[in-house]
Image 1 (cartoon, rainbow, N blue to C red):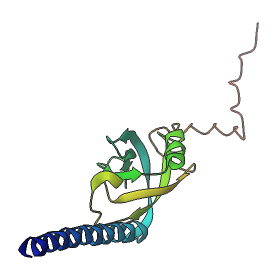
Image 2: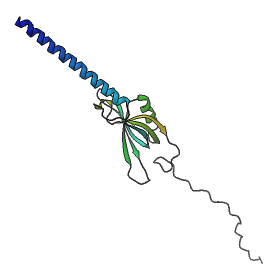
Image 3: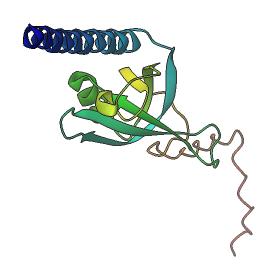
Image 4: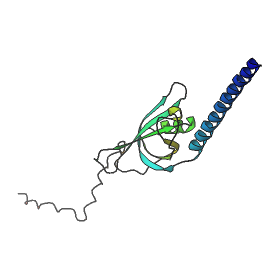
Length: 161
């Protein structure tokens, strides 16, 4: 009789452990889904993308760096970002070295770095073509001199003898 009770107790402990693991896994999955679908912040930043690389052992993501310059000659601020979509990464690589505007969402509280090294996830890119003084901009050309209104009179020649 006693051995039958011990078997039932052992089975009930295993069942409770399995249920506990399933519940914890479901809560972890729900939390991760919530943090990835809800953005803490979103916005747009402009600058020059200077680095893009694909990183990760199991979860491959594109990690990038953009230099943002507020005034010519000032030290650039770096915007470190993650791209999870290969199509967006290809668009960014196509405009590398040009001034661009990146559209991003910030996700906080992600449980692992498998989703990216940063919390800033770039969702789109737009090239900015009307930039003055960028690193690849052509230097301004001097304006042509306007034609003279009255040409200078030539000096009178002495009479020949």
